[in-house]
Image (cartoon, rainbow, N blue to C red; front, top):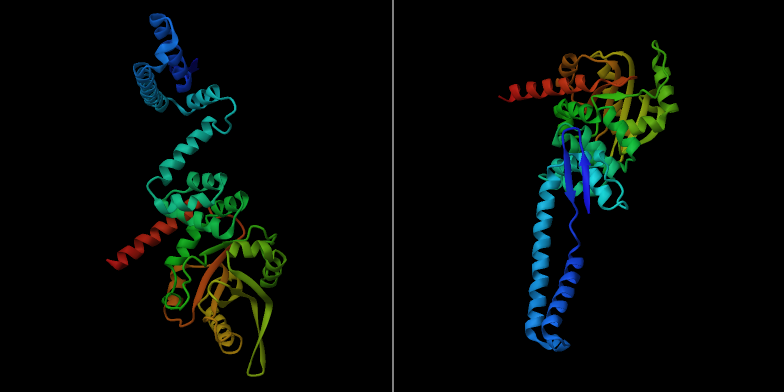
Length: 357
């Protein structure tokens, strides 16, 4: 069977090889016919020479089949993805999923994971569509590994994973990790990969000039989406959580418990730009939680000051002397362009390298 594959540049002719079993049957028929012609009876069937010839013929059939397979593979490698898809479809019409686009993705998948044993092992736990989303949109091995582990831990569907990639979760998490204060790094629980430098709350229908109460109520109204944005492990405890100190009542905007970190996480909301004075209130809440709310087996509480804007240099100065485990993040009602986050992450990496040198 001959298949002609036409492309814009030239026409390739691929000849399908005859199945090896067909060749063996043909060899058997020819040998039996030839032996019978010369001997004129069936006594040759008991001859060792006849059976030796049969064995040699079968071995040669397999050898020529292997040589043909190698030659066909070499010709197949030289084809474009479109030509390969056409060839496979013509060769076996029952085969599905070998379009030129899928073949290109399969090749990209192999090239991405072939040299990384850890990734190739993890990728088996994900669906093909999730794997495609990761390796086709990631720009580094670290990013692929991040989203692969994230998808496995959270059991993400394609749609949920796509949202994480589109919102640049990798960049936002890496930036936060690099900005962790010395206090957070010294905690008994490992907080790496838990918090983000910025949180995308595009699911909130907030007016531009909203107040802290508007933000708090909107987050509670979209609590499921907010917890998905926070990440795996966060469990909601309460809104306006009351702590009492010296017979006075104080209220924490939002209180969560993190199952992996085994600690309370207090969120203080600010609709303006971060000010160093904002830290004092959150530090007070963390002290009250650790003294009066935290269970003996739990780790020290962590605070997250979620503000609308922040100056990274001011944040770095403010956190340098604080003794409380605090994260200062900003919330965004629109997606941040990936290019901006990439640039910010690279600049931060360069700054840290210069400080180390």
